[in-house]
Length: 540
Ligand code: BGC
Image 1 (cartoon, helix red, strand yellow):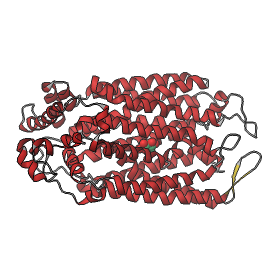
Image 2 (image 1 turned 180 degrees about the horizontal axis):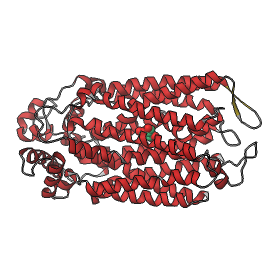
Image 3 (image 1 turned 135 degrees about the vertical axis):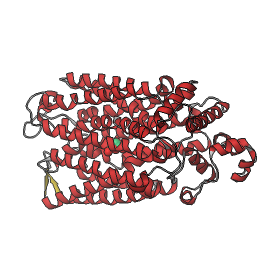
Image 4 (image 1 turned 45 degrees about the vertical axis):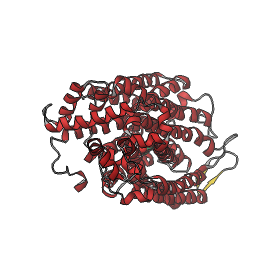
């Protein structure tokens, strides 16, 4: 990973334990990616269709499920994840980050049991809801746990590795689906679903061993336990100067937050915090609207409909491109910064989606009575798949990881869990909306819009909006500490000006320096309260 991963000189203690822990926790991403990725193949499996179809058949007499059943089965998971993500802040602040992750894995397991046992749609759907609830909790808890334990200099890569794990989960789901889809028994879908027990067991075992985050322990008034946890993370004795220092910083922040009163959800909608909340929610919402999950949820089915014979293999290829392209993205996040990556990523996705839309629309035909689609030009179909892969490359190296990295770092600590859970929930809300509506939009038949490949024009339009969003809303936060990011938002009102901003002070200096530092800060205040970031935000 080159220079971006070099520990800065003078940072005491070891970083590898926290890095290993951060990377292990990222494993929860495998659970997330696998669970969301497995359904695309399952609903295209012949045995599953035979078992779960309620009597509907296609023109050839083969069992199918209707568009409304498809959308119910696929989207119920995202509905569960939405509520799970919203609930994450509540349990994380009550029972701790570590126990929350354990409980979430338990909820997820209940969902997997129900799906494995199901032989008809209602129980399958219930299972997907519970599994989704667990995934939603986990999806907000992981970036929280990671950024509360990660050394600052490598935070971007550690949180980004969560996305890498998501892509590995998606790929594994496609590989397992591809291995079992030809079986003519319930193993065809029970094996891919059952594999998920392994992810839950691995995560729970790890969490039983790993420490609670020092920040949560300070919050709960357990400074000794916090010191032990931090000492374990940095591999230093509890009374080492660096541990005492870092803990002092966390405690100072926390005590200051307490002086501002209890953080409520209302605080997230006030003053400067609201702008950041909007940035986080729009970033996550637009990430979904770029159309990525159309490919991962309905891709197998869509490629099959477009006359591509080996749609399971194509799905494996798209998932593999997703994994491979995340790695350059991880490197580039800290090297080139969030803003240029999101900007160029949006342009790349926009162009690719437009080309897929044009190729798909002009080179496939459809029989008017059956609605069955066919390819008019096989080379154009191949070119269109190539552009789907190029689109995935741009997504995976930019918007995929950076949505999680940015939402993990832009919120003030006091309302962080709450804002993070709301922005994650926005991701799932749009995820749900897309999963729910696309079958109606794409499919042929009464009540459906029969857009087929024209759906890609919608993703193109959304990617176009992404370009403007980045220009006007995304601040460059590369290489800044969380406290400096606070300062950045205080001082710079226009996102495009954030690129050349240099920090003038740090939170600790502000605490130590009081009014004199505040005067130098130049934000128009003269006293400590004026300069303090939280204070500024609460002034509205
Ligand atoms: C998105 C998921 C998507 C995945 C693809 C994540 O960042 O939030 O919805 O399936 O990337 O890699």
